[in-house]
Length: 86
Image (cartoon, rainbow, N blue to C red; front, top):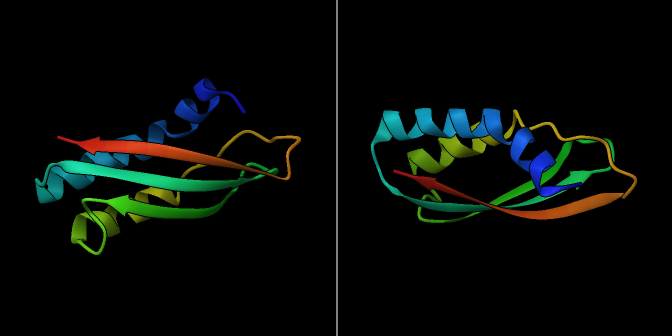
């Protein structure tokens, strides 16, 4: 899975993250440690950073659920994806 494929797959998530920022108005950075299944579904998303346990963080977790990635020959792909809200 290429960087451009990941960025493309995260486009809708980023748009929803902007709505989280609009709703709560708190700046900061979150990094998502993702595990993507070979079929392109999101197997796991662990958030670390400024928004853990906050309403903004909960909003970001919900946004992450819309992520859909291209299929891969690998059983699973691990990715660290940063998000900056400002």
